[in-house]
Length: 100
Image (cartoon, rainbow, N blue to C red; front, side):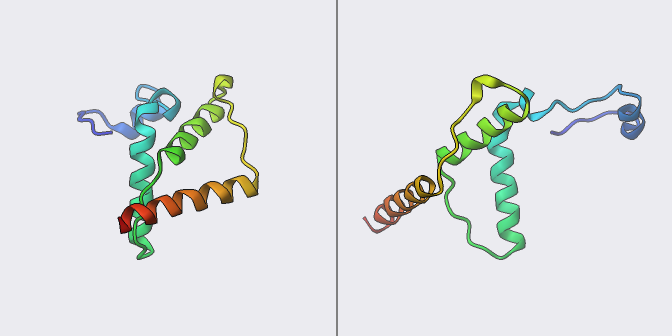
C-alpha cells in the first residue's frame, strides 16, 4: 500500500487514527502479496522461481478466510497422499507442457 500524508504515522497508529485494513478486508491483495513474498524468498535463497498454481493461491485465500473467522470458507485439508498425488500431477503437467 502506498499513501502520502503529512501526519506522523507512528503517532496516528498509536492513537488509532490510522489503520491498515486486514487481508480479510482486502482479499484481492492476497495473491499479489503471496507472489511477492515468494519471489523475495527465492531471491534471498538463490532459488529459481517456479510457477505458482491457481490452487495454491486459492488455498491461501481460504486460509485467510478461516483466520478471519469466515466459516463459509471451510476447506477440507488434504491427506499427505492426496497432496502428494496433486503435486505429482501438477509437476507432470508442467514438465509435459514445457517439453511440448
